[in-house]
Structure formats: C-alpha cells, structure tokens
Image (cartoon, rainbow, N blue to C red; front, top):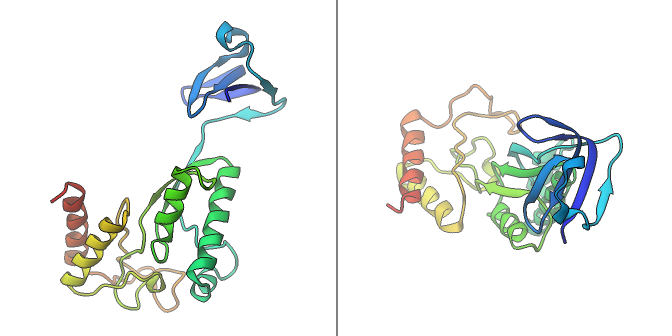
Length: 213
C-alpha cells in the first residue's frame, strides 16, 4: 500500500530537501520533494511524520559476509556450525542490514552456496533483507585464506571447474583470495597465495561464462 513519509530533511542524492516528503509506492518511490508541493493525487494517502529525523536513500554495503557474526571469532563460529545453522545466521544478518538502512549488499564469501539461497529467498519475498549480490565460495589455494568456505583450487583445471560451478549455481561474481588474510590463522595479508597468471585466468573464465562462452 502506498504511503507518504515526511521529515525535516530528505536527502535525494542531488541535494537535501528541507521539510520534505517521500511517496512510497508498491516497489518504488513515486515522488520526492517539498511536503508543501505534494501533488494532489497523493494527498489522501496515509501519512507518517518523522520529526527531528532525516530520510535518505538506502545504503550500499560492498563487502559483507552474512555468515560471520561480528563477534570475537567469526571464522571459528562458521567452521563450527552446520550449513543449517549458518543459513539461520545469514538470514538474521540480512534482516539486520535492512534494519539499519542497507538496501543493497555484496556478500564476498559464504559456505555451500548459502548466499545464493539467501539472495533468492529475499528476491522472492520469502525473507527480509537487502538486495543481494553474491560471490559464493571465494576461490583460494589449498589451506589459503578462508579455505573453510570450500573454494580451494590449485591447478588451472581446478580453477576452471570452480568458476564454471559457481556460474552454474548462480553466483553473481567471482571472489579470488589472491593473498592471505587476517581471519585465517597463519595466512598473512601481504603474502601472495594465488599467482597472477592463475588469478587472471580465473577472472577471464568468469567473464567468458557471463558472455555465454
């Protein structure tokens, strides 16, 4: 159902409207501008005022891991949980993101293609969360950064199969862990793990799959 929201400040992307109003339609914003200039066609809609507040466009978070809980040892928790437990956590994390104003998020590493499941559930209206863009299992060498997400690949053939499988399962992009990282014990962030030659081939294969080649 459509409704009108008003607030002392409305950020539009082009500037800030003082004493602004936003008309929310079924799946898009129908109108934004000064409340005093609200078109007559919207005058009878339900109206909610947010005094002392600012209405702004949804935020975009370009690097999230819905399967990490933000606690002192998120990698340890992920490694210790079943896929079912991880899925519950990821759905909860997605809902939390939406609750703080994130309307688009990019998940750059999850286990078992669970991020694909979460993305599709949100898109189908079965779960609440931001619009998701997902990478599935990040590709890394054996024992490399985030190896526990299941994306280990060493040879060119293994990289090729991993990229093709990601494409088959619905990943939106490919995440390559070319170096170590702080969340994997013994894998320093500055230590190159995947040679440039293999990394470039993996990315080229993803581009080819995207083009249908």
